[in-house]
Length: 356
Ligand SMILES: *Cc1c(COP(=O)(O)O)cnc(C)c1O
Image 1 (tube, rainbow, N blue to C red):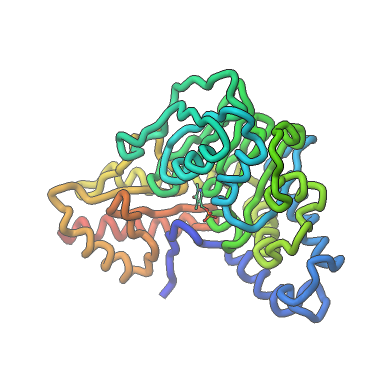
Image 2 (image 1 turned 135 degrees about the horizontal axis):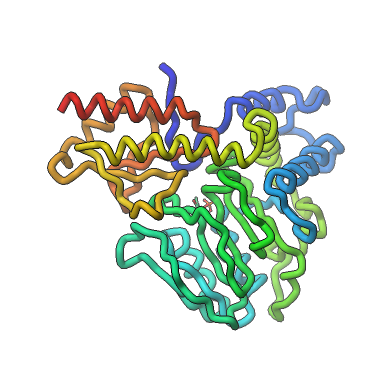
């Protein structure tokens, strides 16, 4: 049976990226070797790195003065690298969910942290907006998509201090005005590649302003200077990331078109939730994420949640069990998930509702 993959991360990749990765594992760039067993300093792998960085810049229209870096360690290591490299005395953070909270915890190791807005008291059901950022903050940190709670900030903020964003779960889902950011980072395993690589888009002139000594591996400058090859980079995830970027450019037609498709998918599922007698969304409407759609059953049907999960599984629907901090269901509609899969889910919801 065809599977419809709604996992929140690691998550669905395009068939194109999977097929090209399999090809590269068997025979990489005509070398007669696998991409798994070749030097990262070979000219063939250097070409992969160069093209991946170039496509990042092209697809997101990244201006001059920025560098794209690929590292290990996951987005969670960025929670510490960001303040290590950028926090002099004080940083501002928006507490919009679990991941933002973890970033705040790390930043406190390096200096004063001012949480300028938080929706924690309301179990993060909305994206906190309308806050002011102290002018003396070294940067403002935001998490654009809250993977666990299903809220998203789908716009680029204008702020008076350097803006840093965790875009782990919505990178390439919409055009981004990179010029408004000092740094954007994310783990690759939601919208780009298998787990193991982290991308960082960094404005070079924000570095070199802190006085503390920074360990070599945690210093962004090290990796900029060495083109992400200071040490062995996560070769295979970078190779797959390149295939995803090619897919995005050639098969989808760019990030603007990706956004249109994502809006169509989101509308399809949210309409079904809004028109349902049984299901209800968990977030405020104006904060709804197009990447992670969280919903539960209304109190009078609550005991049917387990049955619906089983019913969905019987239709090939995988990965919609909600995160334990929200419960119910979470359908992740990442870039590679086709509209067809969303329709299968919506049909399953309607059929289940008719049966009960
Ligand atoms: C998944 C996720 C993370 C954690 O990423 P790791 O690569 O596992 O460290 C951080 N932030 C957001 C928004 C995420 O979705």
